[in-house]
Image (tube, rainbow, N blue to C red; front, side, top):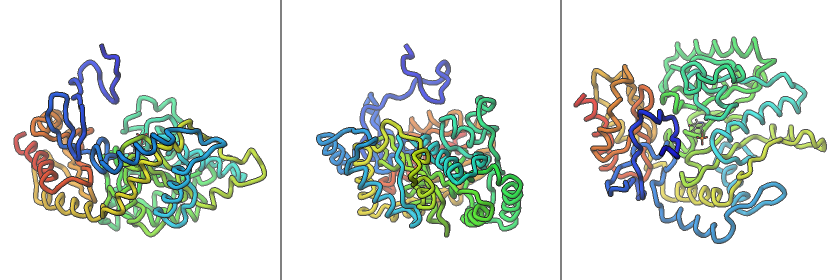
Amino acid sequence: MNSLWYPYCQMKTAKPPIEISKGQGPYLITSTGEKLLDGISSWWCTIHGYNHKKLNKALKKQIDTLSHVMLGGLTHSPAIELSKKLVSITPQSLNHVFYSDSGSVGMEVAMKLAIQYWKNKNHPNKCKFVSLKGAYHGDTSGVMSIGDVDDGMHTIFKNYLPQQFFLQKPTSAYIENKQQLEYELHEMETLFKENNDQISAFVVEPIMQGAGGFNLYSPSYLNEAYKLCKKYNILLIFDEVATGFGRTGKLFATNHTSISPDILVLGKALTGGLLGHAATLTTSKIFNAFYDNDESKCFMHGPTFMGNPLACAASLKSIEVFENENYLEKIQKIETILKKEFQHFKNKHIKDIRILGAMAAIEVNDSKCLASVQEFATKNGVWLRPFDNILYTTPPYIIKPKELKKITTTMKNFFIQL
Ligand SMILES: *Cc1c(COP(=O)(O)O)cnc(C)c1O
């Protein structure tokens, strides 16, 4: 009994998880044969839905050739091709790709790159980070320290974690409130000015803070942060593990801004959700600080499964499908429907509704009112899983309008029957 320990789950009181025996398109099929529309794309990663013919075919072909090989001293075509592809689709100044096996580790790589960059540049004291309240950057130790350690998921570990600097959660909103924005930037500049001798990088989830509550904020915040980072010699890291590959309506959330970060991290939807994998991209300026005759300046990292051929083959095919099948248009249509469905929806339990790209989040006044939403949705054939005071949908991009409306209707009906 309980041989399998589930994530973020009180094993004693939680309802038994639903067993899924098959996935097809946007549907999950349970072991008892019921169909559930996946409203959250398995934590926002299965952007093509399940059991996608072209992705399956690409994986099968790769399995029959080379399933895995180490990237230490050896290399292979899927890893090389994917690095070229990622460099070509991300902002121009990002020219180098370091692989790892999950979003958390991709972010650890970003942090280590920033610290070692400054060490190689003879600034060994620049090894702290500035992060945002409401941030979530993963579950491993380094990135737990840059997640919100007071109100986030990892407060239990606070005493174990290195202390970082935190700025208030940006509340200037996607369509910005100028006065609020100025205040937030002033706070940022004060922190940078006083502590830049210790700060290696400013880390953010651009435009949309994901697991910390789907908080949307303005491109200007990032454009201005970029200038302040330059002014105070601080690197800028964008965690696009959640926002990458279309979720906010552009291929990358960075594309909402007029700037490009020093380091950008991709995960989740990178492989189309088929396998765990991440990519940490960086500029030539950073790469060149490691590129030296001095052996000790080389980057000290290398996960066993980095650049796994299956993950790289899946990623290449996923990007190809994204490009050839007009996914940005599909996402635009999803956004239009989400806005139409929720625009005039009001309910006494609801504090705010936020929509951008293929994402709609409903923030409630009291998280207790969401206690029964999972059961309600499941009974209506929809898979939703709220966290804290947020009920959200991040559907797969291949979802049809009728299916998407089934999800939004289920979300609305839940509040109506409460
Ligand atoms: C999910 C997520 C991570 C962690 O990725 P894992 O693959 O779960 O380790 C990091 N950053 C953001 C913004 C995420 O949404």
